[in-house]
Amino acid sequence: GKWRRFMKGQIQRARLFFDEAEKGVTHLDSASRWPVLASLWLYRQILDAIEANDYNNFTKRAYVGKAKKLLSLPLAYARAAVAP
Image 1 (cartoon, one colour):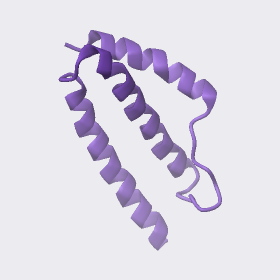
Image 2 (image 1 turned 90 degrees about the vertical axis):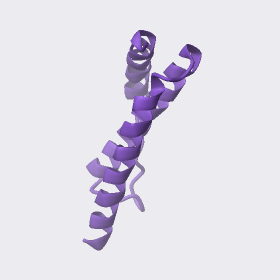
Image 3 (image 1 turned 120 degrees about the vertical axis):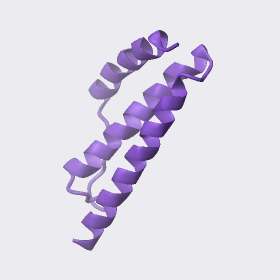
């Protein structure tokens, strides 16, 4: 229980940092937006995987599968392309 509560708090904290970082993506050079945005999205998905594993990161690996990664990359590219 204590570990789960701790991890929930850490994931909530990480999401706040990711949200703040995503706001700054629009200020990056256009060539830098896509890789940064793609990384943010993929790391968020790892947080989702930790939650799906019931916060058990000792015996279960939290990862984003290849199919999800491949779907995320063009979406991040499109989003980065329309950023100001």
